[in-house]
Image 1 (cartoon, chains in turn orange, blue):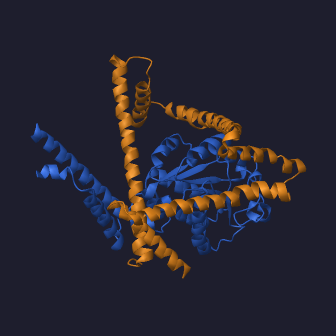
Image 2 (cartoon, rainbow over the protein chains, first blue to last red):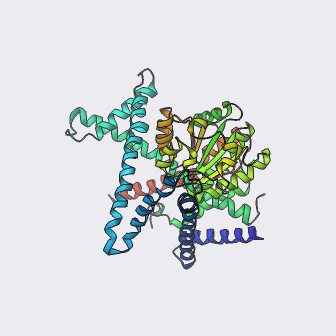
Length: 207
Length: 273
């Protein structure tokens, strides 16, 4: 019975969202607001269940999983930083949140720089250093060099630089086209998923 | 009104109706097209196929309901493949809202192979931290996951007894609808040498090909097409294969509309001049 009610609600909301394709209407607005509300509630629930409870309250208050007293009380530091983030709601002390933001930005920047260099830049350079003994390799190397020329703004795009930059534009456009083609496929897939749900799970027209 | 002007200004509702019909008809009549398996998907399949029996495969469910039609068929097929080969499965996720989808897939597949929770598969759930967590898991899983998704202590799960860090994981399958795939490759693949297969939405897949070309990942399953190919490989056609006829028809329709729109635009412009 629960499954049946759930299916009808899902089908109704799907049709309400699809109704926007005709024009904006109250049914669509209700479905949209409901989606935002449910997502927010779900996120709060998960934050409590998977972040705050197991990673803060259980080890600090109950001592579960904490190897030592230091392990337990060191958690006060991130707790304070977390609470400082909430100070943004109180204008008089909102400056405190900058410390938490600085910490987050610092960690993200540090991790990001090492990740990009170790995980993208160096392996990609290595993968581009290939022997020019077949068409694919030549095409790839020409593509990389001409695209780099296009983004080289320290020289005026004239003469040989202009030719390289123009070739770079062609490669960039091909990449955009491939990316857009895949995006179209992704969006159509979502439509297929919804229509499949409507005719299979809701209307039982397809077994 | 000039016919060419008309076709360059087709009512969008007409386009939506036509698109709805070309997607709906193949689904209703269960039409199927032959599916050719591409190299990145075949490579992914072969990698899992060639892992020794009992290898530990970790699935990261990094998507939610909005990407379900594309990625859920991949998850189902890959779980089937892993259980067929008697691999051990650890499930986790960087997207909290995707965890119920992981649970649904596991509930659908595990009983078919008589796989038992705790010994054949576990679900660790979600923990915050993303990049920092990915780096930290290379040191010790228990720093982040002291209990699993069902609140069972990780040390009470037989499968997790010998699993402490990436050295104990034979393969990571990242199912991605966002940037977590890049991060797995950068922070677990490049830093710890973890072998990775990426299954991604059509939007994300083009950004993953350069990792494939550089051999930073062991396989790539892109969009619904990739999902359909994997379903063919595991000989269990599902919603991926079923959706590809609708997909192909929709692409043809869109191509037709693009051609018509351009034809109308250029002819009308020429006449005006």
